[in-house]
Image (cartoon, rainbow, N blue to C red):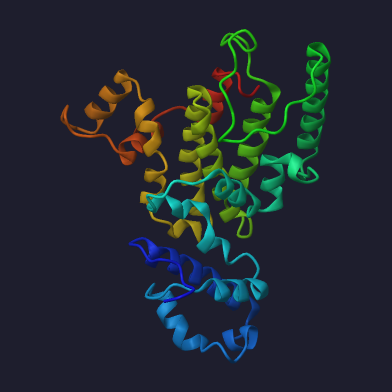
Length: 301
């Protein structure tokens, strides 16, 4: 049907999660759908089909409901649903996904896109410390600060500038100590939870593109913790576990032969049986916490 997204096999789950988000907000307001959204939408008949996942909402209907029931569209438009699509994101699509996040996370991931704000005083102090460190570095090098980088333009640092033995730059410490911590803490929040999960997912993608094993390894552990914490959220707890497995598929290529052997032994797999995201999820679930690993890699203190 014209104006509606293309359906795929994950679409019923996606629609059900979104329709449940709308129902919870309507119930909280103690009003009927018609009184909130208008008499012209045939809401009762349509909603019976939405709750069963039989028909996808059009973009116009998503926007109309979002204007009245703020925060509901994110459950349908979250970037995590791309895990069920073979299509690869473009740079523009990735940046647009970040712009759709709650300002708490959007401004943290891309502070130069708007005034930086986080409610934590500690976060503001950390940002000022980073700014001072960058100014000192630029003065030493006699260079202007480089333009903001993203997952599609970041290059591996030259060995002479950042040898492996040196600690990671302040921005990377900040990435883990503030943004990931804040997102994990917000997962149980009824209003911020979905945006927090989307933020962690986008961080996972971005760090995979950086091709730095330490950074990405820690983010995989953060993703494991997100899966545990999402059960405290009234809607995220209904997400399929398969979503969290699929997000770790890119990590398969980064596994060492020793790690692969551990997985095959622990999962009772034959030597020729392929490892998938669920196996990687199992492997990381038996690992240390993300904070412990981040301290070992000197990403946080």
